[in-house]
Length: 284
Image (cartoon, rainbow, N blue to C red; front, side, top):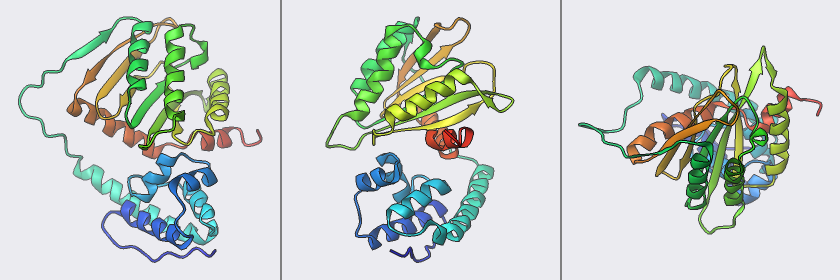
């Protein structure tokens, strides 16, 4: 099928490009988001995000969508470049204008639950994950891969996230994970890279699960977080000995909004795990 969507107008280039993608979808008899996700090799939440204008897609994602709709990606390259040019200009303008803060007045009193040890933190986070309704967003930026931690609680937490993503449910659910892969002089850490490769193979068939990669050049762990629905924020602090980790959780919509905005800013700019591995291991 030839690709051909009419040009879209509008001040928001993300919405404008999303309209073009929706028109292409209509031309191929409107496959479901799940059908498109399976054909593209991406998560269903990603397909939904680009079709509804919540995310501006990368070129590999756009090309996969176009191909899944029976069109030729090369016929869309100039169209994509023009949309990307408008998007980049729009983002620069939004940054210069400043992002409005949540409406908060007076003194904010937050109730935090503190976790002193690795098991305390991961046990609480896993329980919250199992109760999630629709969305889980997590980061993992540490100097060692998850399979090098001996605590059963941490293993149970990581598996709980995948189990939740695998479940069939009437309401749409989504897990997105940002993985920080340590790099020194542009060379990825061997152990974390090996784990990331295994993780890609383990999760490639889970439509409700996606991972992206943050190149991490600091010789220290990052601040990690788990955002469950729009309710609860878990923040984890690690460092020193390998097994050390503690943190806290807060249940507050305004508190959540700050970390949600930060997560979305990161997510939009990062390559998927598959794209990253194809780049650093092109012959694997």
